[in-house]
Length: 261
Image (cartoon, rainbow, N blue to C red; front, side, top):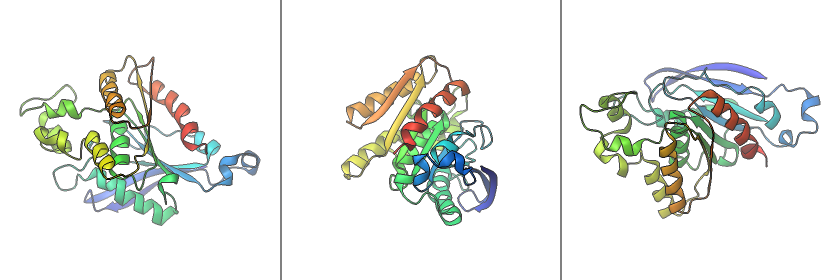
């Protein structure tokens, strides 16, 4: 299985950027002969890291060989996978437009939403949900693990405030003016309402959060919103905290659901 890093010039970030690729393009025939996943074109999973993470801290290795999908793992720094307010911080567009087009052109992957999915943890869980809703013509499914669905918290911030993770200026850079964030496209709830109003398809959503996770109530709030809006989705709570053990458990549970036709 190929595992490599690609470095390219990002116009969205105004500097060189890199991403990792894992691709099961050399799996022995003995492992693929009776596997129905290898009787269809290779699918693609964009995998998003969390706050303080990068493209190297979360790389599932065996699942692509079993379900025939490539993994693209971008570096999003601490940008919440959103277009920040300053030049060179357009992480949403980098991911949903620039990188997708680069992967299509370079590898011939991610051509349709039926073949292109997205998954993330914590900040990346927010990013997976938000990006899929912002680009439903690109991403057909989104798996969101222990998601940092904090827009309502950000909306209540004022200058000089913040939390133990970051200060007010950081959240304003990522989300824009806090007092306006709930009505903005940086709020996944706003995107859901816009997609429904336009009669557009909403990507399949899978969510999981640990019952001891500090983000549990945020995830319950989003689950309640999706139910209220009659948006079909999968939502699971089970014992666990905000850690790699829980995320790995749900990668292994959600990947078969996502990639089995």
